[in-house]
Image (cartoon, rainbow, N blue to C red; front, side, top):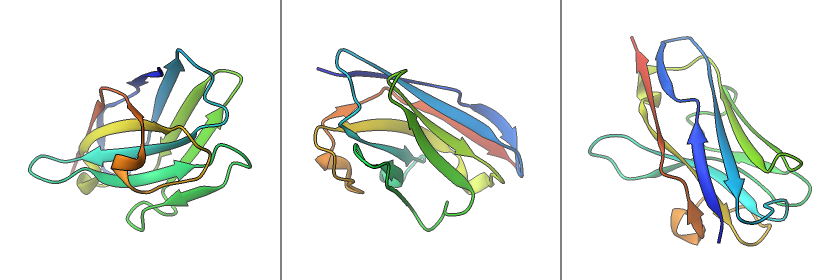
Amino acid sequence: QVQLVESGGGLVQAGGSLRLSCAASGRTIGNFAMGWFRQAPGKEREFVAAISGIGGGTRYADSVKGRFAISRDNAKNTLYLQMNTMKPEDTAVYYCAAKATGLISTTANEHNFWGQGTQVTVSS
């Protein structure tokens, strides 16, 4: 089992930045593909960014490309999401997820483990 705990959410003004962290425990996640998803009130959970388990390849939703950056520190068993130039439409609960193979997926139900989520609110 892998336990994931997100942190770093909060309230930020439009144009500002936040950095989310996702600390993993229970297993080393170095070979896991990891992803960030988000869910706004009344909407379905959507893909934000993903990083492969080997090689560090990344993929982003079009809505965040050029503004968000996903990274990982395997020595710390931690995943990050740097969010810059934030917009009110980025407001959501952000979840990190782990996929027990190294291939990137943008599909939520292909991920095996999930964190509890962290709230991000961007004011206009």
